[in-house]
Image (cartoon, rainbow, N blue to C red; front, side, top):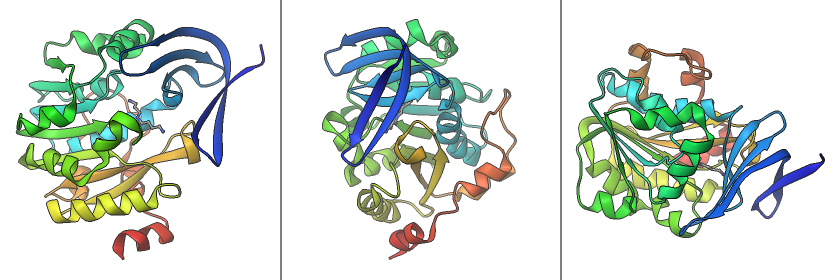
Length: 275
Ligand code: SPD
């Protein structure tokens, strides 16, 4: 079979995956949901035409999104995942024995249901009694001041349509207000080459909100440009995370070297953030 899925997030770059089988396709009240079996990368989740995760390369994204802030805290008790309806970030969060509750605030209940059905590696996490799923808009949820949370991960889609508000100074403010005093948050924060202006703007906003904002980057071969970044928000420096032991379970991407190296930024981008 020589069928290709093409992601056209950017007008100047396309990502192609060879499709072996269409596993599931539907239109939910919020978006188009597509699950594919792809050659080499395995089972793949696509929302509104944009690749969200593949079986082969999702571990780096989710480990770095969850453990970088969670290790800063050390023994988190209460966590919030914004979005994350696929359950992959949840799997990582639940590795912390100290965790008493994790709230997943996902707008689209169908993403949760579809991923529970077709991504067995993440499905069991939802049965953990520590998990509370809230299917609603995260912006409105955070406005109700549901904190404090020790760790917050905004595992969002790209800043298009309904997710655009999740890439604003106001959203960062709501996240920081929901953090416990020694807490740490990260938000999915796009690609230094393609989105430098947006990232710089959010980084400036972060500087006004917390003592130790930072930007770090993870390799994800199926995302445009081969990787994606995160904005780190905390009054504690990310380096504190290097002092704490990993939670039980195996890492596929994170080790002390990748943890440290993720914060090393290319010169053009480091300058843009400092300017
Ligand atoms: N350009 C793709 C960005 C996708 C980020 N979100 C992925 C969600 C996986 N849990």
